[in-house]
Image (tube, rainbow, N blue to C red; front, side):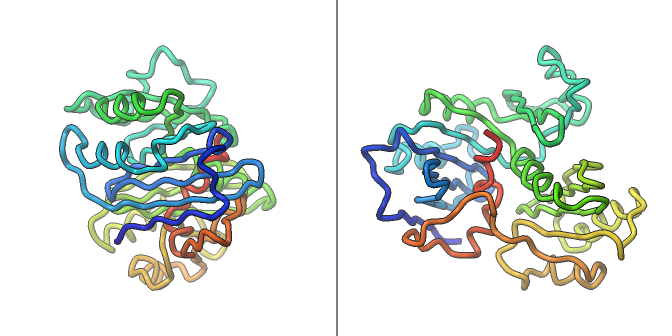
Length: 284
C-alpha cells in the first residue's frame, strides 16, 4: 500500500482549534483524518504505511513529529489503537479500581510494559478495557496535551449497534477484517450477543472461526445477515470464499454518520478500509 495524503481546499490551518483530529495506529502503519464538526465533514485524510517492530516505535515517532497536519492544535484529538488485546466488561461489573484484574480474565501478562485504558461503549452498556504499549501511550500523550485513547471495538460496536436500531428482531453478524486478526460481532434484536477477535493466517482459519461462531450461538444461516467490514472490494479472497458458505454475506457501505468533502477526492476503497477511523468521532 502506498502513502495517501488528501486535503480539501477548505482546510484552514488558522482555525484548526475548531477541528477534530483522529489518529489510527495499526500493524500496517499510521493514518489520520480531520473532521470539521460544524459541517460534519471530513476535510483531510492521510495513510502512511509502514511496519514498525522496534520497542521505541521509531517509525511512529517519525510520522508523529514530521507530518505537518499533526503539528497543528485541534479542538479534540482521538487516538485509535487497533489490537485484539481488549476485553468487554458489562457496566454492572465494571470497577475502575480493578483494571488489571479484569483485563487478566482474558489476557495473560504482557512482556513489555503496558497502559490499561477503559472507554464506555454507550450503545452496548459496557466498558472497553484495553492495553496500549506504555512507550506508545506516553509518546502520543506527550505530543498532544488533551487526547482520548480508544481501541477499535469502540467505533466498531457503536456504529453497528446504531445501524441495528431500525432492525427489530433481526440477527446480524458483523465481521471486521484486520491484517492478522478479525472481529466477530453478533447483534440479536438490537442487542450485542457476542464480540470476539480471532487470529488467522489463512482462509481456512478465517472460515473455521466464523462457522464455529454460527454453531456456538446456534445461528440459522438463512435468518442471519452477515456484513463484512474492512475490505476495499468484493474481490478479496476471504470474502469470495465466505460467500461459498454464507451466500447472504455482503460488504458494508462507507460511514453514514459523516460526509466526505468532494474536494478531498478520497478513494471509495479507503472509506471502506478505514471504517473504524472514520467512525471514531461517534464515540464522543
